[in-house]
Length: 303
Image (tube, rainbow, N blue to C red; front, side):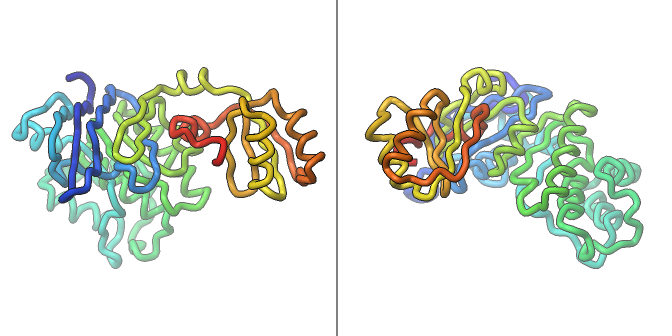
């Protein structure tokens, strides 16, 4: 096996439910690799198996060059992770919380605390208690804990979940800096695909426990075409019109809009006007990561 993370034929079942089905993944050194999938698709399960938090049912795993159970246990100590919101003591400061975990994990270097706090921009919080931190600060402290031992690999599950726009930018920039300045390899999941597309250079698309495709950002961008988005007063009627009169046009829908490959806009707008569909807005641009993912799932025609 090659790569910082590789998995072949990875399966996980809970009783009679197959959560992961023959998943293959390859994360190379220095990459930021984004796992894309709906809630329940299997992203968190993959991460937990890699970290040894839950056992796999079958398949092969290699992590930082280790593949045997005994070697994996050793190598996992070189991995930083944030799978769920870390448990910190509410009445302790950032420094005291990290020192608690340093002692618990047997890290002898006390200087790692200052280094981690500087890295995430929390070195000036003093005696401020964790309970008084903003959500963005709490997430950054979680990242400080994940990087306390200067890991070669970070595994992060939804690290920007619940953050406001400012907090998202803070965490996004921090992850990018860790990758670019320290060479840290990052496996990250997020349902905010617009943010993930600004971070990751390679993506694994998960659906119903299967890895349906791995692609780098260059492949995704070259596969993307110009897209037109029309906001209408009735997506249901608009969809029926496009399906009936423009059967060759692939499209997706959301609550208020219909998205389709540019080149059909004039004809479609004319048809909408003839059928009494009110056009409230029109825009165009390159397809997004979400558009690419939806096409992989075959979500078109009926949205």
